[in-house]
Image (cartoon, rainbow, N blue to C red; front, side, top):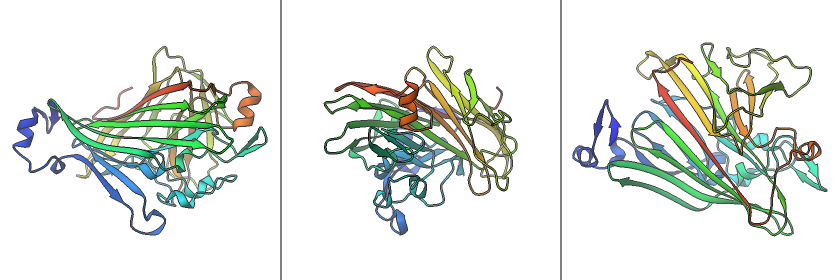
Length: 351
């Protein structure tokens, strides 16, 4: 059954009332037509229950715009969703074309600071956020009385004489549910042992993030990235502050036997009607393969964003990870599975 408009519906009851499913929700391919977004392909998903978002095949099947009830929950970077042809992999040039959006995937071979490892240079946060996907499948279909929307494809990071890692991604949502399900597999399809770093850079912004917002974190070992930084106010938000210096916190070794989760709560989320309603946004994931949560707190002017980032590493770069002995490796033919879920819960803010 599909839960819509405060009641349950069968497939045939819905089809009796609409000319096509897109009247109330659905999935659609669109394409950018100007500026740096010219030629960028998007897949727009509308759940009919309030949640809508764009998946970007041109950018590693990451997620761009995200809204609940027509009101944004994510943060968009100033440069827009630039075509990957504009990407410069050197140093920190990643920042010029990082799209923001609900999800930027970082990796597959480096996360965090630019790094030189084994005589090779790796730019900030790796390449996968700027690599177009292949074999992209887009489908909206009924399974009994449930309508599911799916985007899937593969992204390869490789070079001649270099390592070869392949990301296979599937993103699913159902009509009537405010849930995004992400299922990834990263496989070493090469023939030598390969280092593998991965971080899911979820970005949340105004008006979800305002002075009333609180964040509930999983139980973990909490520490700042910089040794001289105070751990203060990490679970609260604020109005934009001039000259704010970013703060990065590590929530390491999450104490969860199964799935970990972090929740954003705002009891005055502005509905399109003008009313203020309670809402929570919960991100959950399998903590076995993603044992760390990186928190990027940046309530500055313009760059007013909270990053919540499940990861198999921290953000000091590949060489530092190797030196600590925490760098993850995949043997030839070996793969890792990652499952994450984001759910919007209107009317819920209690811890």
